[in-house]
Image (cartoon, rainbow, N blue to C red; front, side, top):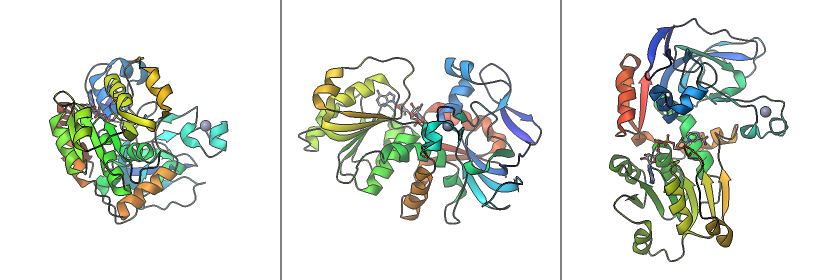
Length: 341
Ligand code: NAD
Ligand code: ZN
């Protein structure tokens, strides 16, 4: 079968031929319809330090997908051949304390599809059946294909009370932009998002941001004055992974403010801890999606009118994958979706 793989330990990605995966008794085989390119895939494509340390070569990559169940293992219940599914990319152990308590997003033994084991950029993917998530008929394939990053945005944005709150989102990558739409959908008041990329800020504005702020030209404090925000932000969503963005967020949070941190900084980063202590801030780290509450919330938000279509800016047939990766690398895109059928 066709597979987009990290075939060599050097920058790039290659279309190769690989055997169809085995299906164990508790697995499902998914025939992939559409996949989306994640920031993580770009790290693997560029072959940076993190990728060199983490990714086994050769391996099929990718973890954002939608497909159709093609085969079910002998022990699998509740899934049928022909059913449309997306999937949770974190495989958890099932036997650690958090797994046994139903807090599977906190499993200490998580394995990542397309990161630690073979991925979804292929004609077929075999995963544990519990990781497959059925997609209702009224949700289109390209939206289902981005449920993984939409889930990151959802898990982060719904971590704290949002109704009537003033929210600062740092980083208008695809996840930050989806977070704007979620905050708007669930009833935040002012949603201010920052970035240094005009294309992405434009997209964030289109998806409901009160103000999209280019921090290389404008100061967040001036924007707060303009919005008559006298006190500070109630909720902060850090979605850039840039230490300076987090530092500036700390400065403009109100006392008692709450911050959810999704962005992954490249290394250790110093902050002014006095901002945290004297303001009584609460900071929560976010990893992945809650299994499977986040998935149900995503479906419910789409079905109650949340529109993510503007975030999908490019779609290519999979044979034009090179153009897909280059589009992502340019920074002038939202989500890039590749079609396998
Ligand atoms: P992305 O890299 O596309 O987006 C980050 C954005 O931050 C970019 O648009 C960039 O221009 C912007 N940025 C750069 N400097 C900035 C500054 N000074 N202020 C504000 N913004 C600035 O990433 P993404 O795919 O949208 O993901 C967002 C973050 O979440 C990344 O750091 C990613 O690694 C991380 N992530 C974490 C998890 C998790 O489970 N914790 C999962 C997925 C992604
Ligand atoms: Zn576990």
